[in-house]
Length: 397
Image (tube, rainbow, N blue to C red; front, top):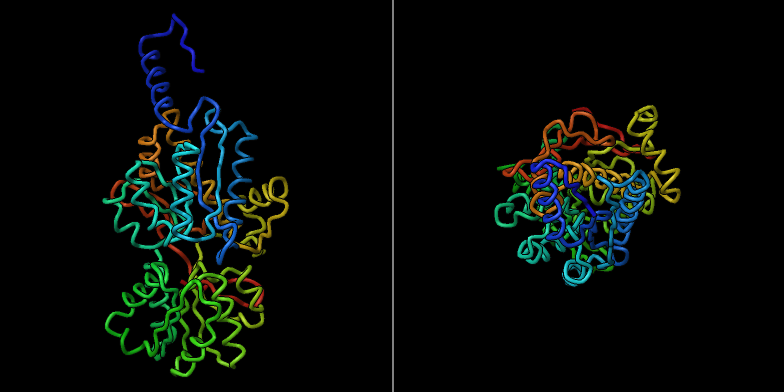
C-alpha cells in the first residue's frame, strides 16, 4: 500500500492519489507486482522459439532479484500456443480475461499477431515488442495503436538482400522459396522493392510452401531445374534447414540467402550441417556471443555473467537466447520510462516515445533505436553477415 502522511503537501497527496487510482484501474498491477502475458511456441513447428520465452523469464528473474522495477516484481505468464493462430487467440483471451495481465509482451509469430491484434486493440491492452518484423504491423499502427513491434521490418530486410544481389551478383538468376504467410510474402515484397523493374527479369522461379508441409524437397528440385544461381529463402528454421540439406544432396550450390528468422546457427545451420551451410548470407542486428571479437565488450560480459547465474542451460550459439535477453531488456526500458504510473495508457505512451539515445548492450554498433507516435518501428537497421563454417562474419557495408 502507498500511504500518505497527514503532514504531506497537497501536491504530493494529489500525485499519490493519482498513482493509486491508476494502479487500481490497471489489471495485473499491484504495489509489488506487474503481471505480463505472452503466447509462446513451446511446441509445434517453431518450438525452437520457445527458448525465447525461457530467456526472457530468466532475465526478469534477475531484475526481480535486484528489487524489480520501482519495487514491483515482473510476473511473466507464458502459455503455449504451438505457433498456431487459432490457439494464439485462445491463449491471449485467457491471459487478458482470466489471468488479468496488465500488458502483453513479445507475442510470437506474424500470423498469430495478425490473428490477435483486433481483439488486443479492442481491449486496449498494450502488446509491447511483438515477435514479428512484418511490415503489416508498422504500416497499420494508426488502426491498431496498442500493438508495437521492436525488430526491424522484414520488408526492409528484403530490400537489403536485393541491394546485395545487385552489387555482388548482377547477373543473378533468382529462385525464391517462401513461407506462404505474411512473413514469407513480406520478404518477397522487399526483394521486389529492391530489384524494382529488374525483379521479373532476375527471378526465374517463385515457389511457396505451407508451414504444415512435411518436406520441401520438390520445391528445391524445381528451383534447381529453373537454372537459378541464387536461392532466396524466406522461411523459418525447420524449413531453412531442409533447404540447406536438400541443395547439398542434389549438388546444387547457389548463393543461399536466408532471412534472419530462418538462418539461426542453432538449430537450422547445425541440424543441416555446418559444412553444408558455408556461404549462407543473412542479416543480424545483435552481437554474436560466439564471435571472439566481442569477448571484451562490456555488454557481452554482462550477458555472459547473466547466462552463468540465471540461464546455465542457455546455448549461446543459439540466437534465441540473446534475442530473448535483449527483448526483455527492451521491455524493462519501457517500464522504467513509464515510472510509477503503470496505467495501460502510460505504458503504451512510454513504448512510443523511446528517445534516439536509447541503447541496448547487445545491439550491433551503428544501429539506432527509437520510437514515436508516428513511427512504431523501434529497431532502425541491420547488418549483412555470411557463415564461414563456424560463425557469421559481418560483410562490408
